[in-house]
Structure formats: structure tokens, C-alpha cells
Length: 296
Image (cartoon, rainbow, N blue to C red; front, side, top):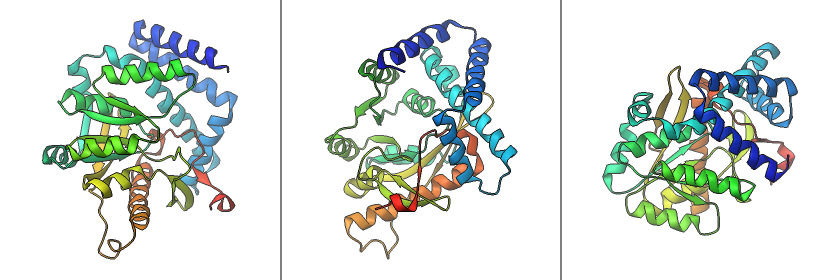
């Protein structure tokens, strides 16, 4: 699909889905999920590969059921994302439940800053908007989508919800460091590396690369490092917080790069625990797991 056509498709969906009755909008996106499953293109195949890594002993029928549910989860993300700017504050607040929410609230109130690392699960925009509604500014980094007009549309969408969004570039780490030193909140989707400096981790008995950013920021600023897993419920989302993640005594004597590796592995281990409990809320459709020969 060309860049211009991609932009037109997303823009058309964004406009039409917002004016549809909710049941019809949900039915439409479930239908899109069903069609995607039948077409079995690359993204669906990668979702299947990821689920096989998560559940290696599952039967083919079990994996296919997971793929269908994962696609519905992914389409629910898009449907809710297109419509969420029209939700009132009451709906946004009442459709979110949390476990261990004090990990974020205490960190945000401490003045030392807090970093929330999370995987591609549930609707992280809904989670971010929930905390913006509670008076906590969420700072985050966005993957630069193509075409440029589409990226700017999503940037504007998130900033209208109260988030502060940074593009991935060479200076973003320095900007986030300053925010954390002022006691701010930084939320980073951290289960897929988009750079060439990713950290190799053990993940579901496989090998993956995850971004160094969350661990590096925690080490350089002293901010609290926690994780969040956003799972879908019938009426909204549930956010499970874990942490804080710190180095143990044996790890504290390592070099900065060694400390980053150790902390990033701790995040990967927590992601695996969360995903194991609810794998189909994790709708990762990109390649995560590497072949051993691809690891340098």
C-alpha cells in the first residue's frame, strides 16, 4: 500500500468510526480481524510465530485460536484509539482498573521521577489518558510512522489527550533525562527495539532485542523503574504494575553497559510473566525473536 493510500485509509476510518454506533464500530473491526486472519499476510504470520514462542506446547488449534483473539485485540486497539477522544472523563476513568497503582502514584509524587516500561498489550493510549485525567502528565516517545502526515496526525491526537510525545531521534534521551530529573513520568513501550543499539535478552526461551532506554534513563537519573501490562477486560482495560526494578549487590559493580543489560533482562522477565497470564492482549505483529545466528 502506498504512503498516500495508507494515509487516506486511516483518515477515512478515523472519521467514519467516530460517528458510528459503538456496536457497529466494534463489529466492523472484528470483521477486519477475521478478514486479516483469512488472508494470513506477513503480520498475521509473525503474530502466530510470537504466540508459538510464548506457548511452545500448545496445539495448532490452540495457537490458531490465540491468533484470532490476538487480531481481535489489535483491532480493538485501533477502534478504541479512533473513538477515545470523544469519550467523556467518567467513561475513561470508570473503564480502567489497576493493580499496584501505588507504584506509579508514589513514584510520581516522590519528585524523583518514574519510568514505566510496557509491552505492546491492550490499549496503552487509554492507560496514558487515564493518568492524564488524574492530573499526571505522561511523557512518551512515538515510533515515526510513514507517511509523515499520518505520524503528525497521531502525534496531535495524543497531545490533545494531554500526553507529551517525542519523536525518536538522537536527542530524545537527553530530553527525557531532564523530564525525569524534574520529577516527571516517562512511559516507554519497550518490548521491541527500533534502533541498532538494542539489548539482547532471554525472552520465552528465545532471544530478543529490547531497547536500552528505560534502564539507561533509570541509571542516569535515579528515577523509579517499573513495568505496566495493559490487558483488555469486557468493559475496558486493567493495568498491572510491577517493580520497582533495581540492581542487586552483585550487579551494582558492573559498568554502565553491564548494568543496562541486567536491568533490561529484569524487564524482559517481567514482560514474560505478564504475557504468560494473558497472551492475546499482547498483539505484537512484528518480528521479536531472533535466530541465534542473527545475534551479534
